[in-house]
Length: 317
Image 1 (tube, helix red, strand yellow):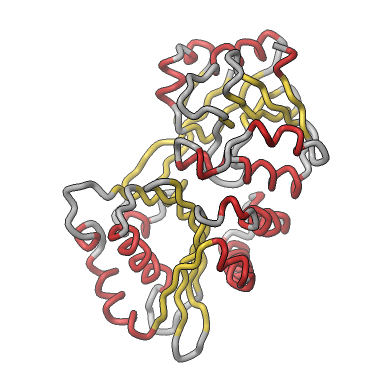
Image 2: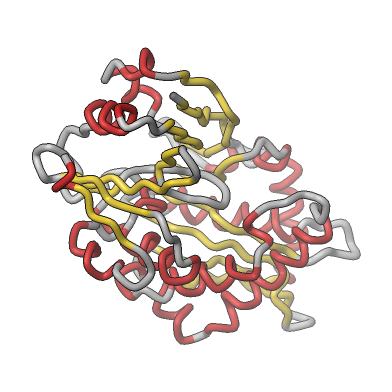
């Protein structure tokens, strides 16, 4: 298997880019964090030193891993939510079992966090090679075929708030090309989000607080291959001509990840963030979106928006 390993770092990432799928071609919306755009941006901004790809035995899939001490970590989203694999054939079978067993033979421990592919490990018989346990929960909205209106799914109080205050606001959805031409939009979101996080969670350590995170996101959405798969929703207070709520979203097929959010405080008890969420989710519902994933965390507002829980797991040898 040695001949199937391709190492990479900041300067050599171009050599492995041909092995990777762009987000628009992956088979699961959660593989944003395993896409070519994500990996290329991550390598350039964070300059990892110990990363490599392993090619599957049939040469049609690739797995990106990182070495931390004596532990192997599947590379994915190091900030918040998902880990995944890098695939060149999204319909092919994976070689997780063979690759993990290969690494174990060399004395490496495996740590695979934020795993949403629990059934895959069970199917491959990998649970006997390590410990699989729950590590957290996320929330996502499912628009099932029997639902007539998004209003039937979410809190009536949010609907009342929207009806009361929406006329004071202007709503807009900007895809990647418009975001590229109006860089102040993403800049406003990232700046406001950082202020919110530092004000609310200043005592918690999280890589998302690091200055590189904003640079990384800016680099990520600059890839023109992603422009039809990334959009920014925002609303503007008409009287003040000021953006009061924003969200950065990624879409693949009929599924959306609401990845970043930020909103301004209000003096009249309106939650601009929830008003924007209602507008965004209603628009998604009408455009036949199937899932809106609000990612990890069980904050109360997500339940009020009609979301349901799902599980993240961790696998360790």
